[in-house]
Image (cartoon, rainbow, N blue to C red; front, side, top):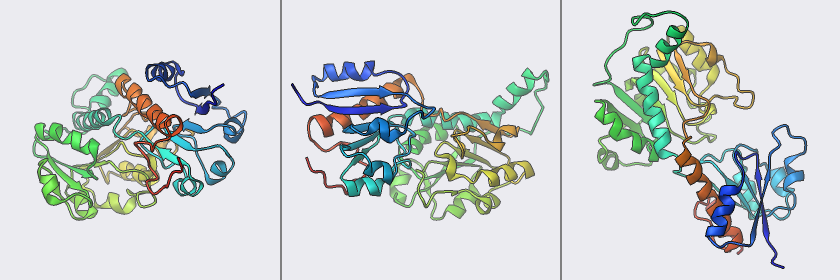
Length: 330
């Protein structure tokens, strides 16, 4: 009997029908996919994952203790772009691959972010709320202005800002980017002005849009100091990670009129799903939904499964290895 490698899909939405159909299509018969959903944590993750060769997670914390407690673990596959929930250094020391699915939702997040900018300036969500409360007044709330000639400042310039830029330019917006790893010439190809300091980006932008991973250097990237530098007429958009913004400072800035408004797809505490931002009228909030479409959903699952197949079934290096310094023993 063939010795199958076992993979745990832990608290992943939907069932494994799609993944199993792909394995059949790809003629892979040495992988066994096991699905476990336990959001109430009746048993520990280690208890569930102990005998498995690979695990697939989205938000589950994979700490050094967990990695060291799983003797057969060879790969942690994140069904997401972000990987701040995994101790990458610990995985590398243990010889465990960590993979993610970059680019699977570029179009979705880009469109969502541009939509938030339009919503903020046209007060679509704000007026919808007021109508539903019985107030039919097109002049209710703050004054509105055209987008033409306004400036969007992008923090970093990866695939999502790159996809946003043609749409922003078509709307008549000027686009700046603080992107230390990109040259002035590279950004000029997209019609984007390179900004040398984050402070300049904040002071010049009418819309500040964040597009960075959550790392030690980007934790509370936006705090009281940065909000003080923004125009009082400016808006903040965050479709990156909740902890990139000091939420307490943002709430105070919105209450005091230090900035005009904010649109966020993420909050600091997504475990409790509670935020003081929910109480403010000058905010637009979506529940970490910017990445979602039927297309991105299945593309991401396809990409994640391919990493498992490469590492466990074909004994090859995964395509989307996060810990690139890892020397894999195949």
